[in-house]
Every structure is written in C-alpha cells, then in structure tokens.
Length: 115
Image 1 (cartoon, helix red, strand yellow):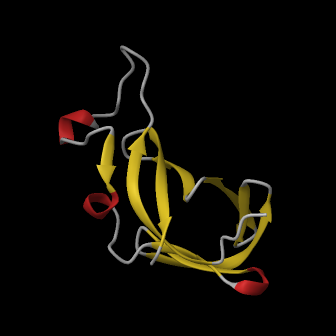
Image 2 (cartoon, one colour; image 1 turned 90 degrees about the vertical axis):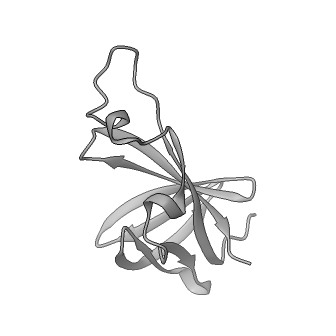
C-alpha cells in the first residue's frame, strides 16, 4: 500500500485539450499554454498535506482547507466540508482535477512530495 503521509507541493498545471473548433473561452488569447509551471499560476503556498490518523490540511488557490482523507488503492479520497474529492496517485505524483470556471477548461494539478 502506498504511503501518502506528508506534504505535497504543486509542480505542474496541465489544461486538458479542447476539441478542434471548440471555444476555449479566450484561454489561449490570454497567453496561457496547455502545460504551465504551477508557480506561474497558483499561490506559492498552495499544497496538500496528509497527516497520520486521516487528517488533511492544505491550501488551494489561497484558500485554506482541512478535512479527512483515506487511501483507496491508487486514489486518495479527501473529504472537505462534507464533499469528497478524489486525487489520483500515479508513481511519485498526486493528481488533482479541477475546472477553470473563467475559461470553461478542465485541468489537472500535479503534486510532488516535499523534500
């Protein structure tokens, strides 16, 4: 079983491609690439942290979060304010999916374990 306990910092934000001819909400007009360094887009203190005993803390888009977590195979299920979000564990990375409401684009945030 994987051990996810510890702090994870975002490294890359990858916007999922739109279908050819589909409107990207002005995303490319604003100079955004499909893959961006997380430091260029997110708050520098953003992170997720998994504590022993199932406690979760983190910060995302500058908003502090806390809740609980549990491991389910290669998924980390995080419950915050009664809602459950799934992060995927792939090798030495955690992946959090989200949506950019301003541009109507889905994206993934890739995290690496803090050293």
